[in-house]
Image (cartoon, rainbow, N blue to C red):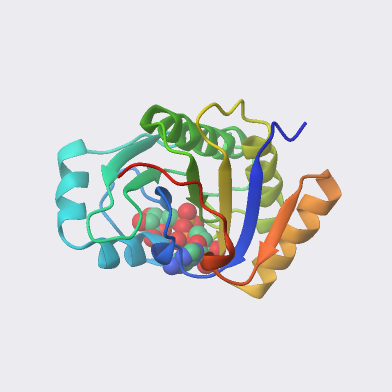
Length: 190
Ligand code: APR
């Protein structure tokens, strides 16, 4: 069951997402880093580090919210995915939990749309195919309320292909677009 989601797949830089909220692939110290975390911190400006410092940290499998500061998106949902340690250390449950907690935070903000990067498949080493199955199954299976639209933002043609093929295999309706401006964002008061 697709739970009525409108879902998009785009290859691009998530810091340019023009909707309500983006998810960050953070670490449990919320200390900033490389990859998508580094890009989000650079684009949001130094206020983001300060806001993260005030929160103090976030356990693996959970998520915390800050404003987006200088980003186009109003909020950043900092999700902490697991580090891949061979698959026998609860990684699958923790990755699903990071996606679910991010959606819980988005629902608590009552936003209509959210964009996800591919949590854990970069520096944290999670095998991309398996992580994508978890990402898509968790999001599409989520009992959304305010949320209407989700965008998966990938950063390479290889990962884009994995998302496309996994969605097809699982039967989830994922629409591929070539830029953010092709995504029909729900309007909301700012
Ligand atoms: N927009 C979208 N996706 C991006 C961007 C970006 N600007 N930059 C990188 N990515 C992609 C990567 O190519 C990868 O496919 O995000 C995916 C996740 O990779 P990482 O950012 O390395 O995240 P993760 O594997 O979860 O590792 C988290 O890395 O940066 C540190 O502080 C972070 O310690 C944490 C760890």
